Image 1 (cartoon, rainbow, N blue to C red):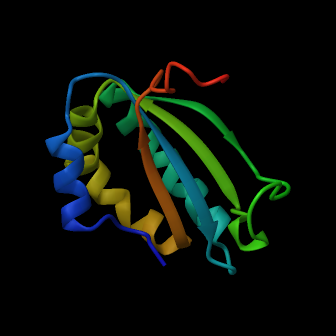
Image 2 (image 1 turned 120 degrees about the vertical axis):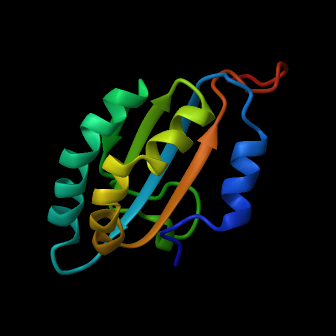
Length: 128
C-alpha cells in the first residue's frame, strides 16, 4: 500500500525540478467505509491550495474496466492535475493550508499512486 511518498521519492522530485509544467497522475483506491466521501472533503479543501499554486485539475473520472493488465489494477478514481512546475507542487503540499487538510487524504485512501509526467515527452518516433 502506498499513500505517502518516501523521502527519497520527494528528493528525486525536487532534484528533477526543471521549471516546466508537470502533470500528476493520481490513481486512488478508497477506504471501503466512507473513503470516497472523505476524499471529496479533502478535495474541497485542496481546491484553494491548487489555485494558489497555479495548478488545475485537467481531468477526473472513475475507471470502468482494465483493458490491459490484471484486474487488481482497477482503481476507484483517476485525476490528472497540472502544476506550473515541480516546485509549485512541492510548495503546495508543504504549505500550512495543505498540511492542515492532508490527513483527510490519508484517512480516505487504502492505496494510491502519484506519478509525475512531463507533457510532450513521448519519444519522437512514437505513433502516439
